[in-house]
Image (cartoon, rainbow, N blue to C red; front, top):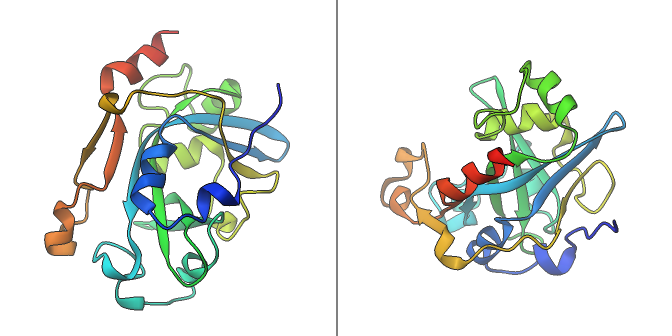
Length: 203
């Protein structure tokens, strides 16, 4: 099977919401320490740069941590949450327009044995990679991968032709961003309907 990685024409567009919606059904793939694992993306959140109060780059803020957001799209932005969870984001848009998309949930696909070993589980279930911290743990993603090109061979996003109907992708406010005031209410979270996600676990 030929690999169809997402390329610059996908990441460099200027509509982070459109890109976020189109990520549902793509695969997040890692080849870390020669161990190939992947997950089908079923939930994401968009962060709309300098105008978005929930974004790390709100108001043009630049730090050592978030500097990668100001690069051309197609890079990984991984940061530590609560000192424990490594959260994986996809940088989008062009240089100096710091937009990004947090991958919030995946369904395990490739390298199941490796995923289970990393998660210390005996069998795949709907908790294996259903949150941004658990999916990074399952796929072996750490903050040391921040800034990594998604065009290379360690972490990438892939299109395997899995397409869902628009009616099956729900939008809602993001989680855990109450500090963002009115922006916390924006419908920037995209997720596949739970019954469809559940079907993948039955296969």
